[in-house]
View (tube, one colour):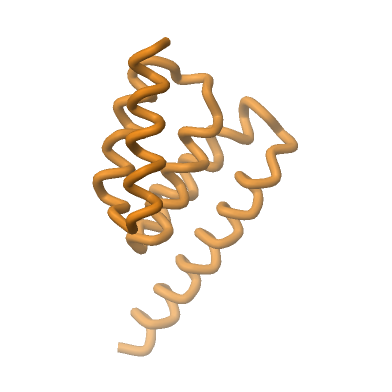
Length: 95
């Protein structure tokens, strides 16, 4: 559990400095230790949104909502992921 907290805090520190790829990697390491901790999924979803990885963000939010069906952050970030996917679809259609 101590390693989990350390990795999560390192991920949070990377988010604060805008290093989203590194943060996502730390949160992924956390998930190997605990697959039921929703905050690391919503945090990684935030990183994916910042990195324009909308499908990955949506997947993380879907996972959280299977565990906590009223998680507000997961709903919000999933909506942002859907929005990003729609914008991408429109841009591809326009090319």
